[in-house]
Image (cartoon, rainbow, N blue to C red; front, side, top):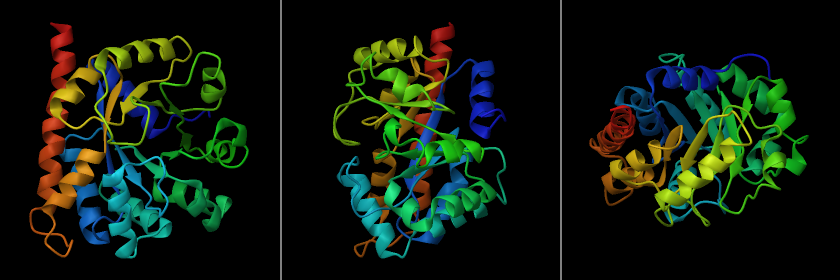
Length: 281
C-alpha cells in the first residue's frame, strides 16, 4: 500500500504527541442498531483513538463469552455485515478522521462477496480489517485484494508466534500489528505486563509497524501498564460487558447504555494518556 490511511495518520499523530493510543472494540448492532450507532458516534469524544467494530457471527471461536453473547444479541436484533458497513457509513457523516476497523471472521465476507464487500467497505469509510480465521497462507483470498483497495489488513501475533513464524505474519500486514497478549480467547484472563512488553520489544525487531496489544485488558490500570510499552492498548470485552450490564431484563437498551460505555472509555483513555506522561517525566 502506498497511500496513507487514517490508521497511518492516527499513529503518526500519537507519535508526535508522545503517547500510546486507545483502541476500543464494540460489536456492531449490540444491543440494537440505533444504540450501537450512538455508541460508535460517541467513542471519539470519550477518548477512543481507533475504533474496532465487530461483525457479529454465530461461531466466534476466538472470542470469549462476553463478545460471543454480544454477537448473539446483535444477530437477534437483525444485525448483519451489510448493516455493519452501513453503520460505518453513517458514522462518517459526522467523523471523517477517526480510523474504523472491522473485526470478525471470513464467512460473512465470503457470503457477501469479496469484491463487493471491499468496494462497499471502502466507500463507507472502513480503514482496516482484522479477520481472525484467515492465516497468511490465504493472503490471496482477502488480504491482498484489501490492500489493493486501500484498506489496511491487520494481522494478529500471539504468544506462540515465534521468530520463525513472524516474517510470514508480518509480510502483508499494514496499519498496525495486533498482539494478542494471552493464549486463549478474548477476555479470558489478564495479561502479565512484563511478558507482554518483552513480546512487543521482540516483534519490533521485525517490523516498523505500530504494535497494539489486546485481549484481557479491562481496567484503566491495565491500559496504563500496557501503554507504557506498546503503541496502543485495545479494550473490547470490558466494553461489551458495560453494554450488557446496562440493559434491562429483556436485554434491551436503557437510557444509561451509551453513557455506561463512554464513561469506561473516558477512564481507559485517561489511563493510557497518563502512562506516557509518566514515562516522559
